[in-house]
Each structure stands twice: as C-alpha cells, then as structure tokens.
Amino acid sequence: MRCIRIREFLSAYIDDMADLNETQMITEHIEHCIWCRRELEHLKYCQNILKRLEEPELPDGFTIDLHRKLMKER
Image (tube, rainbow, N blue to C red; front, side, top):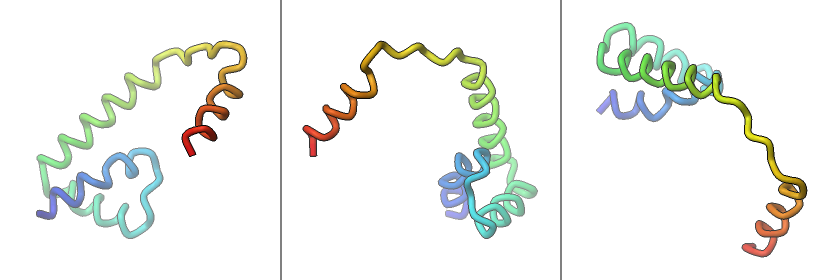
C-alpha cells in the first residue's frame, strides 16, 4: 500500500513540485524500496527524452482559437 501512495507523488517529486513532507516521505522510501526507485529512474529517463524534443511551432491564431473553444465549452 505504501508503494502505491509513493508512486502517486513521483511525478511531482521529479518536477520539484512535491511539498516538503512528500519529498521527505519519497526520499526515505526510495532508499529502501528497489521497485519505487526503479519507477523513479524510469520516470527520469522519460523526462530526459521529452526534454530533448523540439517545441512545436503553433499556427497563427492558435491561442485565440483555443481560448474561444474553451470559453464555448464552459
């Protein structure tokens, strides 16, 4: 059960968005749990791959069109 809870916070942890309690809980847990440590390493690997991707160029008017569509959905 503890591993399930830890894995819920791993993404926030690698993005430095976990709060102090979550960070401490994860850090202590991964020192002793090989499965969660492997999951963390897998997420870091995926994160590194995604960082290498080029940011796509958005078409003209994309932001305005998106905003209109979101307002319409409300």
